[in-house]
Length: 140
Image (cartoon, rainbow, N blue to C red):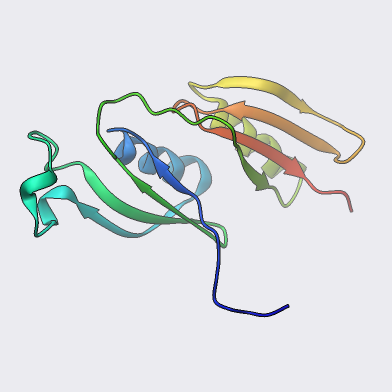
């Protein structure tokens, strides 16, 4: 495989709820904030909607060894995440249950954690922001 430096990373737009989401993922997934820039820090203030100065223009968080970028985007308060889910691999059964339960808080369980033909524990949930997660314990 040729290492060209290319990588694909999720960039999530929380439509005004980014700071709330970052705090939720810090608490539930032990996410680490690597950087965060607010709209007020942007040198070109022309494109900033009034009242969004304190909103997050860009941030990067790390969950495990994965970087996820995020923003408040247009800041209307109604994020829509459709057509994809983030897959979260747990190290053991207890962690799998803990992660699934934490992500479910205020969200919607789409498929309860259960044994499947491909995993000892697998479940699907949309968290409180509507972001889809697939929590999986890999086969040994």
